[in-house]
Amino acid sequence: MLFLLSPAKSLDYDTPAGALPHSLPGFVAQSAELITELRQKSPQQIAELMTLSDKLAGLNVARYEAWSPKFSAQNSKQAVLAFNGDVYEGLDAKTLKPAQLEWAQAHVCILSGLYGVLRPLDWMQPYRLEMGTSLATAKGKNLYQFWGSQIADYLNERAAADTVPVIVNLASEEYFKAVDKKALKPRVVNCVFEEHKAGKYKIISFMAKRARGLMVRYAIEHKLSAVKKLESFNMEGYQFSADVSTPERLVFRRQSA
Image (cartoon, rainbow, N blue to C red; front, side, top):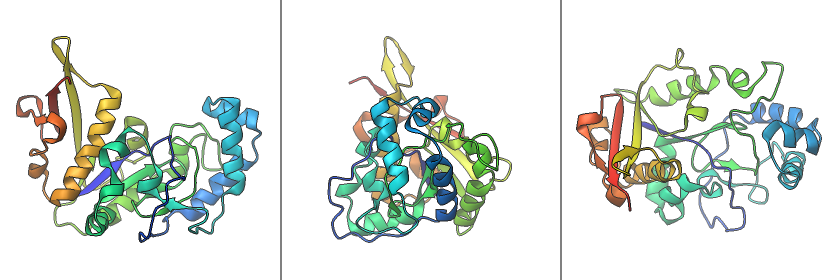
């Protein structure tokens, strides 16, 4: 199985990665193409394009200018350690053992507006480019058109090693939309996380994000290889709810803390 995650807006390039192995992103040429487009825009244009404050726009213009097709320990960090949002707090990759990181490298894919798809240990330079950004390129008016079927083709190739190819989608709608469903061959299973609040179950965004990271953590710790085994996920009070689930939509619920 392959597990899909969204990236995070928050980044941590201050905490040293330590002596961890690294790999290189697979879509560097495409990333460089997008950087070329981004470098043509002023801080004000970036602010308008991405709805950013002037300060954040200036920071990211500087990031685009500094970006290099050559990755090193000086300008990069392993993606799973560089991302720092709710999902990655749930995953808590810094506490994974080397063998667990190796398993994650083989089974986890992080979707990215700039990098297409990242493996956990892929070196990544800091950036901000959400998949829903309407950045026009020669390939179209937005990043969905830019990436086209490239991400689905990549996932097909990665999943082909499995006897029964399955993708466990733990990415947001914005990011999973970048996967061309017509081109994608593996079965897709979505995981949904709900909280009991005010007498009913509902999805609460930041809790659901953390739960996605927890699910990947659980998969790594138990080396999950079959969809049925996902149902045993029980971290932080979540339980599988068979009565509201379907084979393609697994629902996990808990009482509000």
